[in-house]
Image (cartoon, rainbow, N blue to C red; front, side, top):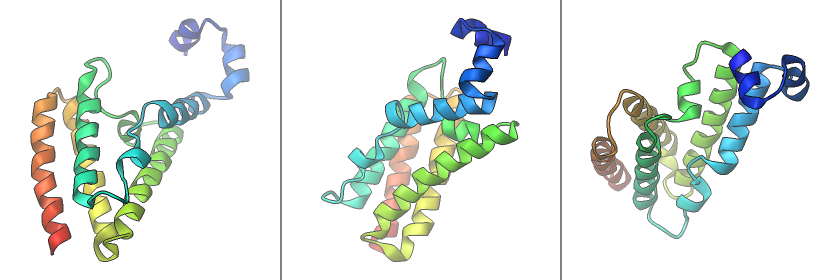
Length: 159
């Protein structure tokens, strides 16, 4: 806590006045990330483009974002889903669930029978990409994984 208040240039009472708790700060960070740093799902998941193309573009964007900054590898939301703090984990899981729902809904518009299954596959893949980036895998390795996943998605959509 002292590191956070020092970095913000405030004292602990001011911190609690502004954020109420560490979880409150984390929620503000997640909300800001959704607006200014997260993968722009609305821009990528376009109804006028093939589903497999959009999903592949989204996964490639995730791979690039997760591996680009060596000081901040992975995804703050996905990594937060595994943290030990119960409140922070709940906040991250809610954000993750909302993103998966956007993906599921997008797929369901054209492939309703497999939308839930495919959205869960994509969610699992994105969690894996984030974990692999945290483990030190580079963008090229992550993009190779996305290529293989794209073949799987394409196969599912043709079936």
